[in-house]
Image (tube, rainbow, N blue to C red):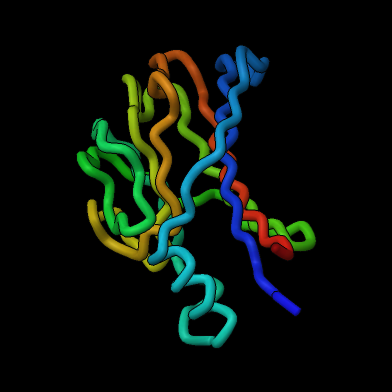
Length: 153
């Protein structure tokens, strides 16, 4: 009998105006890195606090994501997680970038556990280079939802 676990990552980007009206939505799959898998295993064993700080990092790098990644290629800004929840075997992190926050085009994104506001800190959980990047205008809010799904393989 073969037993295994599959870890899948999905990012949803939801743009809204200053009144909360949805402008557009986009969803993409991402890469859960080796360091992310090690961190999840450490949480199960109690070696990593489940309440550790979680940050999203944005950057302008263009090198494809790889399982061995531990940092973004060109990180420029970070934002702390706003909410952490779980729905059965799905971990959900939500980040909010409000009007005026992190405006511009971002070609790479990552989630970091045990992190701080300092670029490169923490354990990289996942890494995504959204096709064409993600552009945020100064008058838009952007909700970023990252889902990590654990499933039998």
